[in-house]
Length: 454
Image 1 (cartoon, helix red, strand yellow):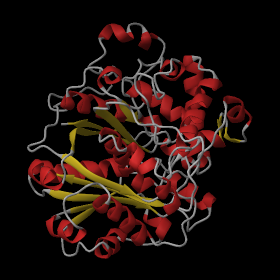
Image 2 (cartoon, one colour):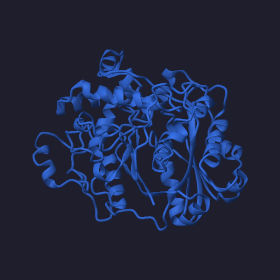
Image 3 (cartoon, one colour):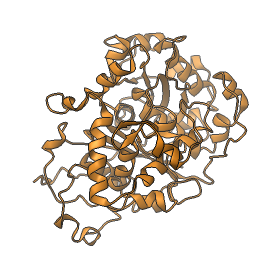
């Protein structure tokens, strides 16, 4: 059994406050042959600098930057090792130092963590975090095998070289243990595809109902195509700064009050039984009798997510995420991973995740709207950009700028689209604090970030 030492649960702290000052992204597509990865990253940077009310020009901005962080999941897709070097040069940041982060599906979130550590330590005071993925240069089957390589190839690849197969097994176990109807998982797909309809950036916007999901072709039992994330090409840029630089650049920076990381074994079968790590909104009585019939984290929970949430909540002073946060972006790679995450980050106790959806809390107008962006299922999973994209969406929500970037017909026209007649206003009124979860593999790496207005 894993037992924590005295330093393992030390709550992180920043030596200097860290702020978000700007964000930008491309739209996300199955194929983007007309633009190179460098051009997509340049588009995302241009939006961040030129369309976020910064007080400087692009030339002035580049003269202030002193470090860069890049986020790409796999060199395989673009067939280019050290791709960040090409993009760094293309964006005009040579000869500044930079690093490229790779932590599977959580690459974007950990790239923001790396940028935050640079700012919080005083090493840098203005850091663009640039994420992208080029998933359109190989067949989908090959792309799936690349992504599946982020699981333990010695043991898990034989399940079919496809992540849906890994999560299908977890779904079967989770449904069996917690008596969850398929309709609950289908609701998540309906919700996230539906919210994607109101985003000009989205790849897979759909107005569907539960019956459509249940009748949809199966990828791996019990997961249907509509319950799986999309494979995307696109880019996103988030700009981090220290306090002095943040207020020099903008009148409305957003504070990154916490970002923390957790990990767990790459091979799921190596995950040993242990006592449940309690979040601030839980007590030992929360799980009285729970472990009499099952192990934890077992095959249906993620210790990495629980660890990251524990550290981030305590770092940011979150005592109850449903009460203290106004919206959240989860890493909904599959409907089952989404409901698992609800429990791992304390939106409901273990075994009760279905209630977060069934109660309506997860929807706009509910207690904690999640994935109003459309998430990975409805809008994008250009893996290296995903965690960055999540925080940009939250950043715009906290700045009350959702409509500027989602409801302006010119933004839709930019991407060759027409704004839909049934677009919804997805701005959360008076949003003040938000959370983002970036998740890798079968839970090998997870980051949790807390953003808040100042």
